[in-house]
Amino acid sequence: MKTATKNIVFNQDGNKSKSVINMLLNCRFDSTSNKVYTGYYSGSGRFTSAHSAMPTIALLLKAQGYKYTVANDALRGGAKGEHVVISKTAFDFLLSVKNNTI
Image (cartoon, rainbow, N blue to C red; front, side, top):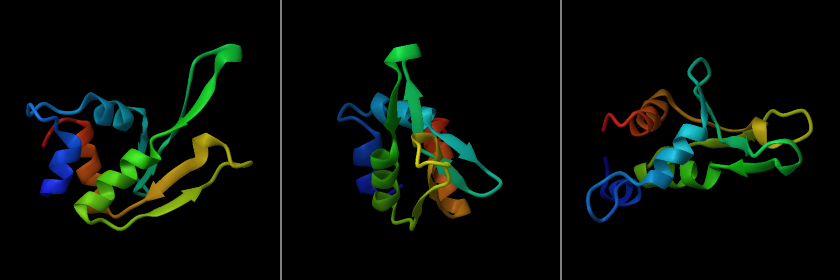
């Protein structure tokens, strides 16, 4: 792991950043096509709001030096279709950060 990535993933006290881990936990990982879906919803009923983990995922991929493509396969451009297409190596890296195996 590169130093720039360590500065993003770890706090100053050496523990993993809860915000980065929570963003990765909200993402859906599709291992058949190496896609990471970054859009998610929170709340319920009338108080539902759409969120995106794209800035965090893009920051991690850029810091590590991986190339990625941003796309959206939702019917009307909804948050659930927003995803990043990455290589198998980058996919495994994000999974290792998510699963705390680094």
